[in-house]
Length: 247
Image (cartoon, rainbow, N blue to C red):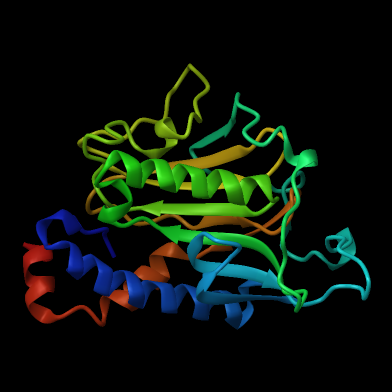
């Protein structure tokens, strides 16, 4: 199924679709994409920022805060099989170089936050304070070692005219991943590391969504089926809206 231009409708229409897509993403991740010990939950509050889908690991040795040892991590090894994504760019800005001086407050249940998926809405980019808040939210998550997948199907507008990848500073100065009229949407998976690394795809209206990596650790990831879950969520869109979007 081809991606639609949701700017044809009012913001509440995409919000309705957005909620259905969140449910489908969570369902897909929990039905076998995530390895044992991990689970996805929708619309959770994670240390202050809100996220659409959060990935947590429920397994943790008693009395420790260590991450999974490699043999229990599951997913695909980045070194053995890098995801086939158009852009792979390491940030030149060490946006959490002060990590060692910070303390992350975790929930007492030990359901440790690993990654978040954020589906961008028009409200995230409507004003400068809103998009600055989005950037702060992403930086906070990365600073706590939480990997982030951003799905942006809203035209950028004046607050981020070249798209979120350029706004967040991911560029190799050779082939900048800028959104255009032909490819106004972006998918960006950010691997939390000392210098965060982004895997970026630019998408045009009527193009299919590529499966994107969602990192569970610095070295391992799973692929999120954006196209299949988008299509499943589309089934719940009211017929009058479908007619306008498909015109």
